[in-house]
Length: 186
Ligand SMILES: [Zn+2]
Ligand SMILES: [Zn+2]
Image (cartoon, rainbow, N blue to C red; front, side):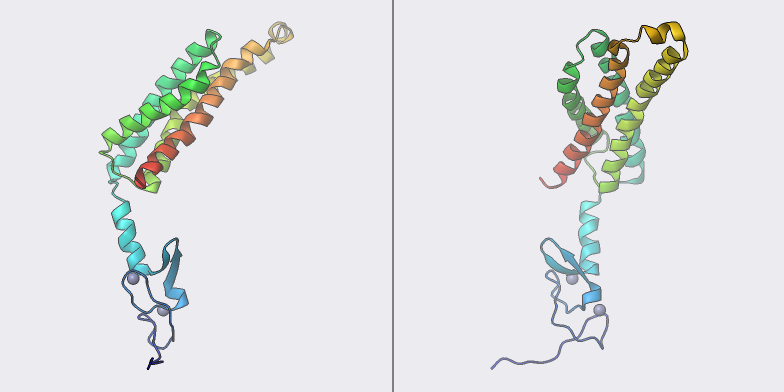
């Protein structure tokens, strides 16, 4: 015969509950439970889980940011060469390639340690590395528009290098983040 004994939350001995953590199987009330893709978990088990998946050390943020910024800056120099040689469309091929190089270099430098906040920091490093070229492009455009004789001769070719820099960053930074976080689930 099944027994219908009342069960209580492990943290709140006065709160009745039928809910159990699917990892440690303790009874937990609604406010003590966290809904995860695999079911309800208690907060202690969630913390344990995060420890396993957050292996990054404090200096990984520094190393990751710097390595990503330097490589992204080199990439943006290559992009500016490509767009000056009218090979701008190659940026579409080059950007995912640059993302792969950056991911491999950063993973080697941080010994494949990982955490979501580290991946975000690395993606921000990519943005920081690509930003000077964009700011430079914007300031030279401002210079062109401030002088009447140049502005009247304005051609789309003057703005294209800047557009390619933006395209490069818009492809590379998200691709780096996606590649890094994809690695977590392998
Ligand atoms: Zn648990
Ligand atoms: Zn509770």
